[in-house]
Amino acid sequence: MSLPYEYEQLEFERTLEVCKRNDLIQQSRFTLTVQEQRMVLYAISKIKPDDETNTEYEISLNDLYKIAGINHRNYASLKDSLRKLDSKNWWAEQTDENGEMYETLVRWFAKIIIKPNSSVMKIKFHEEMAPYIFQLVQSGAFYTTYNLEYVLPMKSQYSPRLYEILKSYQYNNNEWYFDTDKLKKLLDCEKYERYPDFRRYVLEPAVEEINLYTDLKICYNVETKGRKVVRIVFCIDKKTIREMNQARDARSEVTGQLTYDDIFDITAKSPEAEFWQERRKTKDNEEADHRRKMEELLGKGKK
Image (cartoon, rainbow, N blue to C red; front, side):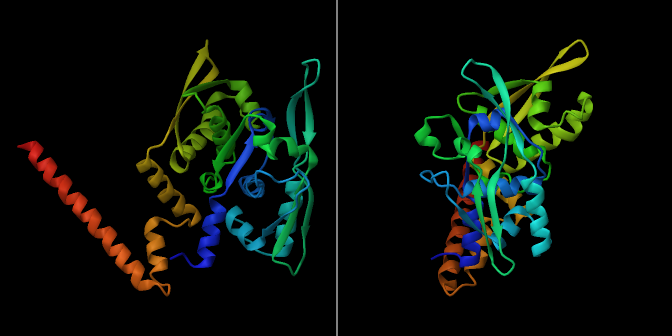
């Protein structure tokens, strides 16, 4: 038994994984709106582990509209969104053979093709992007993987970036720190020179959304030198199964991602309605039995 295709396909697209080499996450800086970040991450999620660097990808425009949150679904506005995205190159820090650091300007895409009467878009990533997103297992590089669905509900442009930065440092680390100026540079928010502004417009919204929607729960402390905040220390932990279910429910309120109850409701309207109605009754009965047993155990504990 399965979901109707339109729901099943969209749920599949949302749960695709984003894989990036760690130095792309930890050393690059760029300015993208939330919508532009969704478009880039959705495109990256299409890459398969063995894909060659010159692979072209077909993306359904209807899925792109829903995933990226593009409200004005017309050809002209889509072209404008893609034009703006293509003009936003980004800086990557690299090291030459002498160990000296330098920065290089990198483009996201080498090719974007859309046709007025077509329902698909074709893209090809720029060759300079290849080392950061293609054949990461084979390269032996350190890389980070996370589910696309975690960042789709985010409204602050700084939330997806802070999330993936902390995710990249999560392995074997429960704590990680950044010099304040370095973190501002990574998030491309150096315009917030005063720490109270940086905390209000960048840190607090990002931390709130990461805790609400993703697989991580985080908090932070600051270290000062005199009156100046010079370092920010993040504590990073994985969510429990219960907390992950709560995060899914929170995402569903924003993106329309299906909750488990939604899946029951939708499939109950399908040709297999009787099966799913019995399945839901069984689930409800199991939950009722569980609550009754817990109440009995708690009652015995009070005596």
